[in-house]
Image (cartoon, rainbow over all chains, first blue to last red; front, side, top):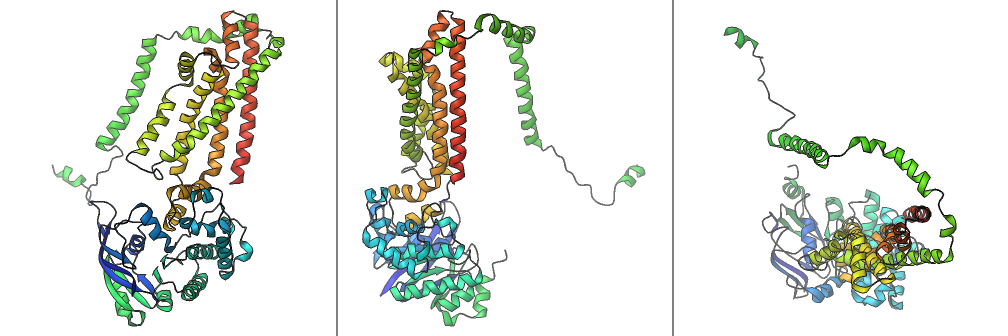
Length: 250
Length: 279
C-alpha cells in the first residue's frame, strides 16, 4: 500500500506568480527511502513542503494513508503534521533552548497548552527523548544549549526531534547541505539506520547525487517543476543526470 | 564643416549623467523645499535673534537671583519623600500593566505571527497606535477629568503610554525573528500558542527584557510630571510651588527630579547592558 500518493501536484507562491511545480505525480511505499534530486530552483523544497502543507499547493491531490491532505485546516491539519516528521537544511533548532527541550518540542502536537507553558512533558516523552538522544549519540549533551553544538551535532538533534513525533513519514529537506562531506555521510547513514529500524518511510530532497544513489532506493528527478525521471536508483545513469541538470547553468 | 566631422572620435560617443531625469529632480526638489520652508518659518515666526543670543545672560541672572539657593530642606521633608515613593510606585504599576498588555498586542500586531492578517493584525496595530498617538500628559488630563485626582488616573495614563510604546517595539522584534524554528514547530503539529512559546519567545526574550527596562525608564520620567495635572506623584508639588512662586522650592524639586531620573537611567542602562550580554 502506498504511504503517500501525489497526483498532478501544482504550486505557485502568488496567484499571478510562475508555477513552481507543474503537475508532479509519484507514490512512496512503506519501505521506501525516496530521493528527490534536481538543480537549484527546480522545486524540490516546494514539493516537500507541500506534503505537510508548509506551502499550500495550488492544484492536484496528496493522499497520505488514503487521507486527502490538500483541503485540511486547523486541528485536522495539525493532526496530519504530527504524523509527518521533518528535518531541515538549516536544522531550525531553537538556539536558546537546551538539547532536551529541542527534542521534546517534537512532541508539541501531542501536548496540551498548559503543559507546554510550564514545559511539563509527560514522563514517557522524557524517557523517549533520552532513548533517542542515546541513539544519535548526544546523551551527554542533554543539558547543553542548542547553539553550543557543532553542525553535525545540531542535525542529530534535528533527527531526534523529528523521530520524537513517532512519524509515519519523514520529510528531509536537504539534510546534509550545511554539513561537510564526511559528516554528511555519517548523518545520512544515521538517518537510514534509524528509519529502517523504526520502519519509517522517507522522502528526501538532496542535491548530492552520490549520496542519493548510495542511500536511496528510488529517485525522482525534477527540472523546472517537471518530473524528468521516476524509478529505482539502479536505473539512474549519467545520461539521465546530464539531462536533469542541463538547465542548471542559466 | 569638414573640421566638425574630424573632431568626432572614432568610437561612438556614450551618454552618461549622474543626474537622471525624474529621480534627481525629485531629490533636489525635496531638499530645496525643506530649505524654503525653513526660511519661510523663521520669517513667519519672526524669531528675534538678538533676544535668543541674550538668553544665556538672563538665564544665569534669573537662576542666581531667584532659584538659588534651592530649598533642600523642603525636599527632605517626609511628606515630599512620600510623594517620591508614590511616583516610583505609579511608574512601576504603569510600566507593568503596559508591558502585560503589550505582549498580546505585540504578538497580534506582528505581521508574521498574527493569528489573522485580515482582522486581528489591523485591530492590534490600531490599538497600539492609538495609545502612542496621544501624549502621556493628554492621557493624564483625560483620566483626571474622568475619574478625578489621585494615583489611579496617573497609573492609567502611564499604562496607556507604556502600551503604545512597548507594543510597537515588541511587534517589530517579533517581525525580525528567524522563521526557521517557527517552520519546525509548525511542521511538528504545534498550535499557534505553542509555536509562540517554543519558536518565537526564546528568540525575543532578551530583546523583550531590554525593552521592558527601557519602558520602565520612560515611564518613570513621565511619572514625575503627570502629577502636574493632578494625577498623583511629585508633579503636584511642582505645580503648587510654581503657582505660589516659591522659586527656591521649585529649584529643589527640579533638582530632585533630575537626580532621580539620572539614577534610574544609570541603573537601567547597567541592567540592559547585563541583559544584552546574556544573549
